[in-house]
Length: 536
Image (cartoon, rainbow, N blue to C red):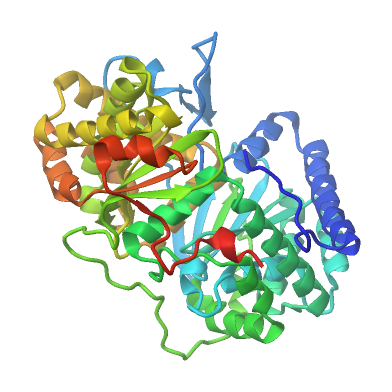
């Protein structure tokens, strides 16, 4: 849990707070209106859809009743992979229809009789990776101003009032690779609600007062992140692996956001918000007549003739991190967070099934993974431990993570390194392989729990350029994974000799680490500055 520290100049003015909470109140009232107006059997569907937008979608371990199931129409499956019964795993990937408007917008539509709300998702290729190096935070600030700033002749308050009157909820989420807008409303009010979304995307106002408020709120959130040890460790480890200036490691400072102005927002909007950069996802009940979404968005004819590409700087092909060794980032805290690893793998669907099985065996399979079984269950050294090989463009991370006591830091680190060496030297047993494959198939099926989840899977497949049949063939690909495949991807994507280590904790842990891992270097390196030192 993040620790909230009060600092001069950190919090917004009273006026900003009042306006911010007014927006939140409008959202809550709109959402409650949906709950009241929806039929009883649809309420759970909306709740699942809202919760499923979290990146941590894996359900917690169940206590007591182990018969609980997740249902989607006529399909149902257990709420946890350990509840799966022996036998063939069967899961039919829901089908969506796909189309392209004359202006280049791609539309993915999922229609099913059991859907009782209307879900409309806009995915825009305008994520944080598009931030200019000298204007970090611009992508997120633009997206948040877009949502909060009204549109056309509608002021921010009038825009939200119209959403409220329609019983609609409209949210925004900014990721590294994309911006996602989610609209939820009743089917009967969908045409008007979708028109409001179109107006927001095509005729934003970007009022100065909204920019000032959203900039201050973003700055406040960035400051709070510095009090979250897990976030600090995640951010600093990426710099250790990629280098402090690499696009995959860059993060905005509060002072970076403060410098952004309305002209920056307008320039970024014109650069990244145009039809060819947009994908639409729709989940709705089956209809006998056309819905008309094509006509609504076909009128958007903005063109971007500027040839631009996101900054995807190359990484070393041999997986070498930018900084190699054991580094200690001092922070006044009782526990220690350990992150170790190196550069991971590029996005490649051909490896995905085998890598997912490998990850479950190594550290993503919960209580059955080798890291958990060895470091926590057998030796009791860590509160939490896990890890795996992850993809990105041009390459993701191989990372293992643990949280432990200060006096156990060296023992925990040594054991984690040993488990990683063993994953290369010792292929999985038949039991390990079977459990990991079933976990991978269950986790995949769990991505399709709610109607918007279904559409988002197809949107992301298209965004990342995966084959159109990737989702339909994934389960079979996992079933075909053999122990030799797991060993092969482990050798390709994990190199114990290239591992670099970041330990976040009290400076006195240095003496403990140096008994086994000398020399322990300070992070950041001489002449560098951590973000906590540049808050303002």
